[in-house]
Amino acid sequence: MAEANDELNRAALDAALDVLAGGGVVAHATEGVWGFACDAGCTVAVEKILAIKQRAVEKGLIVIAGSIEVFGPELATLSESQVAAIKATWPGPHTWILPNQRFDARVTGSRPTIACRVPGHVQARALAASFGQPLISTSANRSGQPAVTQESEARELFSEEVDWILPGRVQNVGVPSTIHQVGGGIIRG
Image (tube, rainbow, N blue to C red):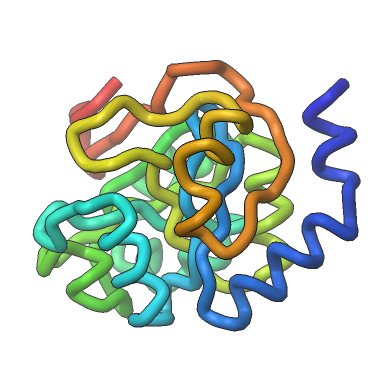
């Protein structure tokens, strides 16, 4: 399986981790599209992603992690049944809007909530798990433009702006994650 082989490219993954640790931006494959990743706690890197995307800060960004435990502070504010509903979808292409407990306004769009996901994409989850802290993972595109779905497109459009492109493949081309509101309701899906 190509995705499993990409995930096992430890040298490429280690290079991506070095870039993230240094405050850089990595282009990477996700479930449905290519994305831009950076350390969610690094203001300079978050601002770089917003500049590359030409995205208004008010729109907010999605954060990913390698395991549900990383989102413990956000999940601690929810009921057992709400946490069970989230656990039933992770890992997977499901983003949940959770109460923000620690993320900067540049990440949340100044909202009291944060969009969180534990990806089902093996390589994206391995990247986040190896980093150990939440990562921004937002679609690789300029605001208002279609998201990139192929590595070749990511290289052609963004190789001069990102700090590393992690070789990989999208799992389900063009199918973005479903966004759920805690307590019921689907925002995107």
